[in-house]
Length: 354
Image 1 (cartoon, rainbow, N blue to C red):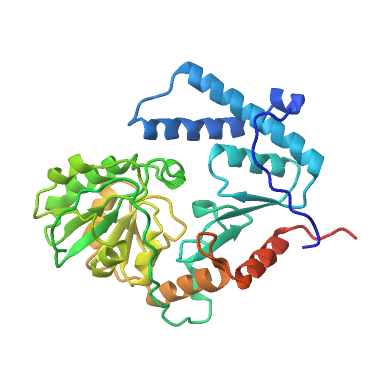
Image 2: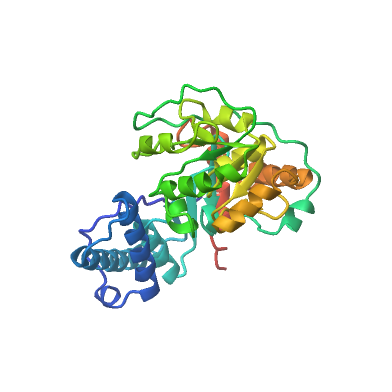
């Protein structure tokens, strides 16, 4: 790119800008505190933090912001590249860059297998993928996308197995991680996975044609063995021993808050009900629910709902060919991956002044 890269490792030992330490943007500190409090409660099953913890967090966030502002003035980079950018520490770094009119590039693992996100606006619900279905419908008709082989996640805690065969008709509900940024930021009404389970258990008797098949998130440190016995055997169960791909392929539909499983389900032409804020929640492509009554309504509509097939094809093709970058740091990336990353970063930098 003609310029050097500087890799920043956040350190609390850097000396801050005193003026920025005394007067950080209050909205920034409020956003970070909101995230930190929700994260604290998610880690501790709803317990709220104390006043000393709150005061320390505010001071830490102010300190990081002041340090980052000083760093930006010292280095004056043409672009700040940030992994994720949603959690407080990196969110602060991005805000410090923006305050000096330095553009940002946000990177994350892609939501299709073996891909990477590099977006100048953000990731997940804050990304730059168009939200208007007309945008995708107006693209040239795309062929049916190939169903990708999904990558299994490493299991961090032992999971209880059901020992059961999959039912003929079921809806798949994948759990997410309570402390994941997609739950903390983009799940307005579902507080955590126990809440999700209770909402669906309450509806299970109203839809006897389906069973509800759950799966705990393999990467979560939490386990939910106590929930397994709460759902009557004819209403559903936890199928932790089954690969996610198998559960998607055999399901009639998927209910998700904002998981990438929603997109993976689209690859297999499955109906999707989105109950959080997800960029792929488009009219004609998915059903949406923002409350318990809306979820019941979506389940009632499920039999008659048919996703717009050309919208599905064009949407997935746009993600694969235009938005996502092939390759991923979790596997050995080839030269094409780095060439595409370089081109994307160059496109996000401001044009040089003449």
